[in-house]
Length: 492
Ligand code: IMP
Image (tube, rainbow, N blue to C red; front, side, top):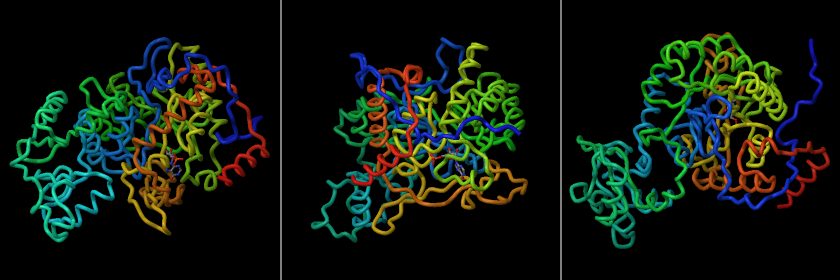
């Protein structure tokens, strides 16, 4: 037996002490970009993202819609693996089919719906135009457009059909899927359009290009895109069906894979990494985890992991620590693993990035994680709260909430992530099924998070994440200062 000579500490137990802010520390000058995969020290990682946020490998979090929105903001999603691999590959393909500037159509309605229904839809989504498809789906037969300019609730009957007031497809300018973004924008300006529907030869809606996006292009100048200007997307895999799942995901165009497990320090992960190296060399990139100490990191780095994910038991929906008594405070885990990453880089000349996964409840937790050495973070609860997450929005007790459930809950039954020797059955739960407060649009929230991270780095005199980690001065907080902070928060 061995007892570590330390107390297990969480991210909440540290504060950053400011360092000298120099003239170089301006928000425009701060680089939040992060390496995602292993590379030689001094060289650039083959996959980098401008915004160091990734979305959790969870059914309640990472859908194609969220993946596209996050890639637009410079981050990356990992599509969840708790589904047949053909379905997961279809989700990856749905993201890869979208080129930057071409949007998944999210406000759609059937021609037989009423003006009252479309009016309510537009109001709740705070939009002024809906796309009309035969079945009301994002890829149905394109039938027309209807906007708040096409009808007035006092002039037209709210029971009249959408078809009675929409602008029909035959009268609209559309473009084929082969259109480039600059051609699409020329059509938008030449024909004074707000929306350009992209429609395939069979008449099915492919995507839409919005004038608003052209105007917002500056905001999306950090998009995560591949060499063909398609959005980047990652995908979770497991250590059971990887021989079938990985080829399907690679074929679908996944940019990055990650072995999804609550405990990654295992021979099964080394085997899965070996399968990738044998079959694809370095053409397929794959991360592994989760681990909470230097031993776990080194094992996976030596087995070929492209990045290593850190965190056991800290997730907001997680009950692993109560159920199994395993885990480690996220701050202690990061400090240990980051030291091993740097030792490994000095010894081998190879840098293996770290992902801090779980328990990041506030933007300040993210700042502490970067200061302690995370290269990028993975977030579940954070993204589940947004419009773009796939989980249902509910109205309960006067509050808007989004459903959020753990992969180890009986709702998800993710047996490949939580192996208890019960075959296809989950022997006991390691996660809960609950709600998180609805927080609106991903775009606005990610902007806010970026602004806060930059403000923290400015206070600490840093202009990039590595410099932030190297120069960070942190102090553990006492129980008294913790209580003082909490009291101040309660007063607000
Ligand atoms: P959050 O950002 O604190 O909500 O944590 C998300 C992370 O929790 C995920 O990326 C997983 O690593 C982990 N996780 C997901 N589902 C479960 C579960 O049911 N039990 C324990 N951990 C989970």
